[in-house]
Amino acid sequence: MSNVHELKYLKEKIEGLKADGVYRTLPVFDGANEAEINLNGKRVINLSSNNYLGLANNPRMKAAAIKAVEKYGVGAGAVRTIVGNMDLHEALETVLAKFKREEAVMVFQSGFNCNAGTIQAITDKGDLIISDELNHASIIDGVKLSKADKAVFKHSDMAHLEDILKEKRDQYANVLIITDGVFSMDGDIAKLPEIVALAEKYSAMTYVDDAHGSGVLGEHGRGTVDHFGLHGRVDFSIGTLSKALGVIGGYVAGSQTMKEWLSHRGRPILFSTSLPPAALGALIEGVNMLIDSDEYSIKLWDNAKYFKENLGKLGFNTGKSETPITPVIIGDEAKAMAFSKQLLENGVFVSPIVFPTVPKGTGRVRCMVTAGHTKEQLKKAVEVFEKVGKEMGLI
Ligand SMILES: *Cc1c(COP(=O)(O)O)cnc(C)c1O
Image (tube, rainbow, N blue to C red; front, side, top):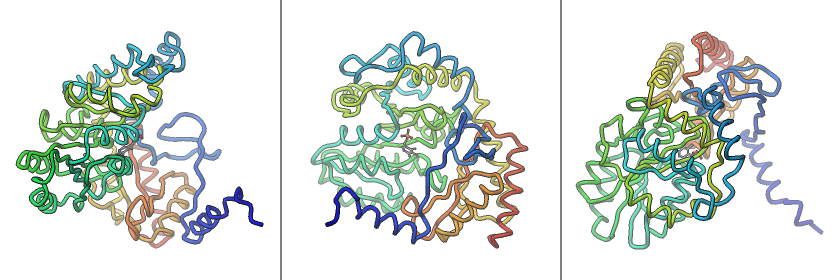
């Protein structure tokens, strides 16, 4: 008799992953997320984090976190609508609205649940969502949770987006166009001016997930909306507090009306405990640091440019990235996995990214350069790429 608790059906699927060469274990490191980390007991250069500005172990933010813990404790104690709304949550929203140059901000516990909770709350039966085909998984899940009808446009294809608007706009009460600001796997930037112009032409709303744009693009890292000078013309600007700001959380920046509605119908606000004091203290400090100085984003771009140029010179295919995200596209999934493994053997940690995260046959390693890397570390990483790339016949 088979035992249902053996989870045989999952074991079979896991065997399938192994057969495809895409099975992996989770990497474990000890110590802070820095430009160099101790991974499985070995010191390696870290080109895998989303810690764009190198703030995940920033002394000022750590001190602010400790101070917040001393005054407020370790947990918020409830969801925000009951008694989990501290003055720190309000203070973070105020400073984020100032940074983003928007009327109001609603903070969530993560970028993921911000998308999952917001999209369903701002759309309803009788509405239409039009989403870029390469949007992030949390947008896809958020769209699935909505009662609205859905359409998908080809990646950054404005003619296709307009075709959908032309054909369907009149059949719906509200239409919401959703795009990533920066696409995380290729590093290309959304054609936001064109998207906004189409939205205005067809009376649609716009929703930009700027998880990889916030802290990176625009003045002081204010994001993709700022980069294109579109303040006031994008209805919902989403960001994370976990990438460039190096802590945890997500937010929607936009109008006071958005905020009021989400405080009543944003399910993660109503049904999930709010961000803890340590995160809030660190984040308030971090956002103020970005308002005061653009040194972090300038260093990030300088490092990214150096690294991308040098990989390109070696003959690697770094795709069409317009941002610090630096994919090195290999193609074959198993080869991409093997490349990452060899790089690690040689002291450079770069995660492989394969199907289903990216389309089949576009397996890659994705290099995430940060403001925290030194030129020496990046130079050494380039040398390792050259050595391993030659050994594996990739260049
Ligand atoms: C990383 C990411 C998220 C999720 O953010 P977390 O704060 O890590 O949950 C959402 N959207 C996009 C586009 C992302 O890249």
